[in-house]
Length: 109
Image (cartoon, rainbow, N blue to C red; front, side, top):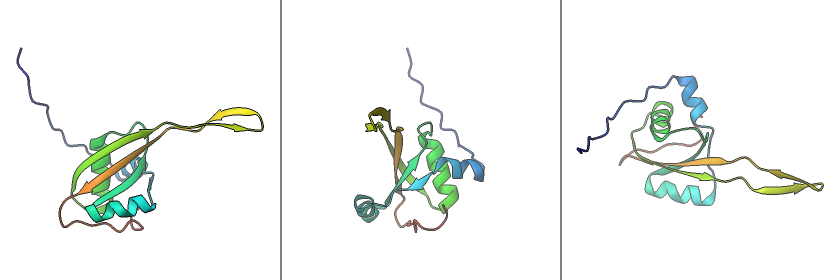
């Protein structure tokens, strides 16, 4: 049984799809500390894949992305007036930019 290498295919997005992929940047103390390491945090749809996120950030901010790390945050169960409800799940993407690249979070999205 031979192991074949994965094919790397370019993910091509339109501008509308890129704006749908990046919902909003994460602006917290911890996220601003990430900027010292050339990283930016974004909230993305749960269905978004790493190649889609990479293509969207490169298109919207005109930077070179080195890596994308994602994590899914499960929604909390909350009570409101005695009725149990559940918040939606969220997906966070931490994008590492190439050396020498930087982004102003308030531009673009």
